[in-house]
Image (cartoon, rainbow over all chains, first blue to last red; front, top):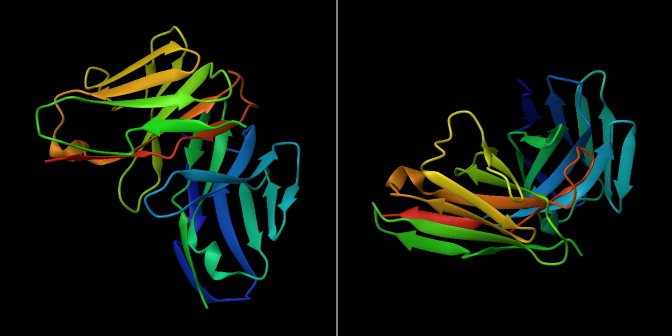
Length: 110
Length: 117
C-alpha cells in the first residue's frame, strides 16, 4: 500500500527566505507526482505536476524535483512571501488514484 | 479551462437527515470523478471513484450504502450522505478527470463543508 509522508509537518519562516519542502513515498511505481496548495477551508490548487519520466518542473518561484528510485520529491520555494502561507500537499498517482501526503503547513511572516 | 464546481459550499443538516453534494465539470467532459473527505488538519482520503454510467468503486472502509454516488452524466456527479451523523461532519472535495487513464490530471472542486448537528 502506497504511503506518502511530508516533512516537516509545519514550517515558519521570515519573508524572503528560500525553503524546501520534502515528500517521500514508499512505492516507486508511480505515474506522476503532483504538488498542491490548500488555503484554509478551501479546495486544492495544483502547483506542479511531474511525470514519472521527468526529474523536475519549474513554475515561477517554485521548483519541484522527483527522484522516483529513492521515493522522494522536493518542492523548492524561492524568496518566500507572506502570500505563500498555506498548506502544501504532495500526491502520487497510483494508476487512477491520487495518494496524498500528510501536508506541510507553511507560515511566512512579514 | 478545466474548472470544477461544487454545490453547496457549506451545508448544515440535522442528524438522521440526508444531504446531497453536487460536483460539476464546467468546461470539459469528466469520464471519471473522485470523491475525497478531509478531516481538520489531515490530508485528503479517497472515498470512491466513479466512471460515467457505471457504479462507483469505493475504498476499503467506506460504506457504499451511506455514501451514495451517482455519475449519470459526463459533467455531473453527486454524493449523498444518507442518515447523516455528527461523525460525518467533514470537508468533502470532488475532482474530475477528462480521461480515464493514469496520465491525465485531476481537477479539484472548491470543497463542501458539511456540519451535522
